[in-house]
Image (tube, rainbow, N blue to C red; front, side):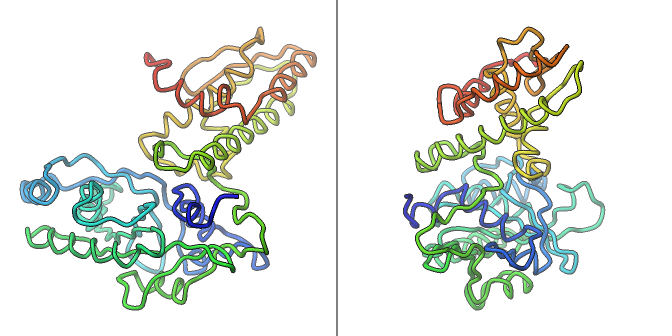
Length: 354
């Protein structure tokens, strides 16, 4: 079993803790949606945030980070609260970092871009943002100091800086917690929800602390995740994609021509979370899901891949339908040579013309 220390620093576990805290769940459950009860909702995952194009911003970026690059930043989550004007711009990190870290460039861009998110949302009225970094609880206070120092550096260049705060993620005998410290710069609603530390997922004895993930695996985390946890994520999401494809094929009324997309499968396999995924790697994510089906169904006569994200499956009769379901049943989600891991590597180079 993966240790609590490794798990609490895992980017996929961290993301799911936040998502659990934001789910619309009944009162009697092991999961406690503490942020949902405080009025927060997931607006998007990976939304591109635009930076101002003025020379003053470029000068500040150049001085603080060593680069004037103003390409969009993509925070993990953006959260809205209808009773509070500030959008929470959430970024998750396995560990805290200092002002000498390579993570500073991203943090400074988030602090500048989040001061007013109106352009990023294509809105005409100001939309204030509030940067929140989530990390392991032991590093949260130190990271808060780093963020405050970066805000001061930005402000010293006469560039408006968004507020910034941290949230600690931990696991103890009671379960997985989100926490903040007194005097933290979180918005009041979030501060109240997490002080004292809030148990998001209750633990039962020696059971695995991980329940059903909303997102078992995400693109862009290669090299930052424990290999065992990464293999678990590939296997789980592959299995879900296959199950959803079986449901689509098995419930169809033949004869029929089915168009199945990776985006459709991921939406169903992640309980709708993928629908709010706006990051640049969304296309790779969907293409990889499609590639899983290509590997399973390529021997069928009525099968073809139309694009990176779409397959076409013509089923003339019940025998062909049964054969398609049988091939999906024979897929091996744990086999890294045929599961999502192989599909991800394949989509880096396949179908570049589409």
